[in-house]
Amino acid sequence: MTDIAIAALPYTFLASLGAMLDGHSRLGEAYSANPAMGDYARPNTRMRLISVAAGPIRLAGGRKLDADGDLASSQNARLIYLPSFQLADPDELPAALDPYGSFHDWLNKQHRAEILIGACGASVCHLAAAGLLGRGPAAILPRLVAPFKRLFPDIKIESATPIVANGNVITCGPDFANPGLIQRMFAWAFGLDVAHVLEMRDPQIAPTPLFDITSDRLVAEAKIWIRERFARDFGIAELARDLGVSHQTLIRRFKAAGGGTPRAYAQEARVSTAASMLIETDRTIAEIAALVGYSDVASFRKIFTARSGMTPSQFRKTPATGNRNSLEPTVRPKLNAG
Image (tube, rainbow, N blue to C red; front, side, top):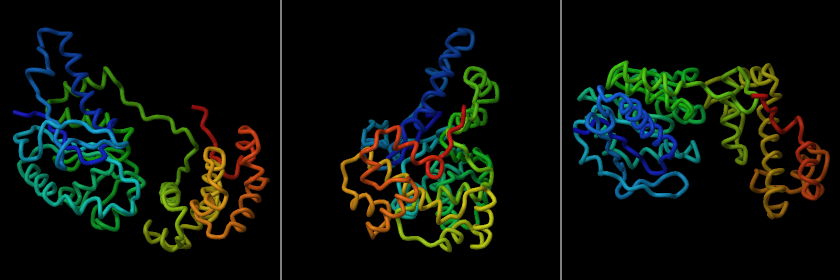
């Protein structure tokens, strides 16, 4: 019997896949220290790494990992885990889900058999496409909230909760909560004592954000949306629609959170990205202007100079510390002390 099946999609994040592998190994480590309890990792459980697509598992970044088999070769698992995978463009979510109808059918079959299924990051969307989430609730990666709402408007999103249990389905939004998802899956499948061993050996503490983040979740989601699309020609009405609020509400909440306006934030994102490219690349100013969303180089020079206090050419020639200081505090976010 395969107790644990990891169903990995193309461009799986190694850290997310490794969260399950490491969790299983930690239990083996803990139990091997007590001969009376036996070696949990070898005789009591087996793990099978499944490639959802044909062939080896393609990891984010291009590396490949040999799989133990495909969906047809995995039967009678006690739990199934879908690690997070890379989705560079959130608006490409429908295209990322469409080719996997047979995988969704397989998930549905396992769900009907009351097998525990957990997923993290973008993989949660496959559970929705398979019909496993019902009307929710579900935890969704913040950067995928807008496209998820468009595809699955009837599913309630718990955007403030990183891990959500819904029957025999557990969803996890951000990757930092991945170990917590593994603990909950082990508690469900193998008992609370097993999960308690993991918790005692490796307590889960949410990381301190590197940058100050607004406490208004709507504004935080708006900033994520803009960061994903700032180089495109978009309208604030489009942003408001995706977030499910009025144009006026979005502007008001943005200003109340001290973020100026959404359009000003997009402009800051363009300038800060251009600044990094001026320092780190040899691209021409015209190329950089086009890449960050300006069709007119003269407009880019004017806005960049107003924001940084120097022209793009001057900025490129200035020592690194001077470059960074010139962008404080309008563009570069404030670092937390830790």
